[in-house]
Structures are given as C-alpha cells and as structure tokens.
Image 1 (tube, rainbow, N blue to C red):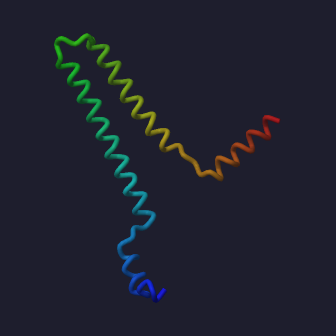
Image 2 (cartoon, rainbow, N blue to C red; image 1 turned 90 degrees about the vertical axis):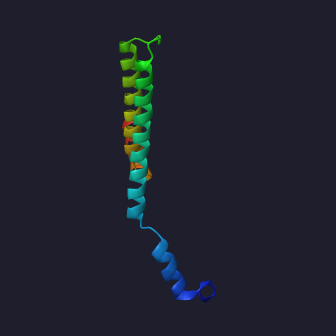
Length: 101
C-alpha cells in the first residue's frame, strides 16, 4: 500500500469517486435526456412532413407515423424498466420449468 501512496492516496481517489447511488442518478438523467432528444427528432419529422405541401403523406398518415414513433419510443422505455436481477429471473425460469413437467 505504501508503494501506491499510502492512506493519502486512498483518500484522494475516494474523494473523486462517485457512489453507486450517484451513478444510478446519472444514468437516469442520461436516459431522460436521450428520451427528450428522441422526442425532439420525432416532432421535427412530424413538423417537416406537416409543413411540406408537396408531401405524399396525408395528415392522417403523418399522425399515424408520429403515433407509431412515439409508441416505439415508449415501448423501448418499458423494456429498459423491466430488467430483473439474474437470480430472480433464474428462479422464475426454474419454477416455470417445474410447472411444465
């Protein structure tokens, strides 16, 4: 330990490290900002299509496309929130296998 700088070095790296709670909060912020960027992209596409008078898409088609994009974005969010711990998933799988046989 002395070769690495002793206790002072440990205090220094601890001071600059983040806690797991902070990491989770940072991840949530990054995820939220990603969703917001995707919403801006979806709204830009809808605005461009609606503003283009020569477009082949009708107003109804633009609404359908926008709804689909929003739904897809929401579904990806639900998928991310549905992760479970491996141990829990393994237990569920074993229980399902027992019931099947």
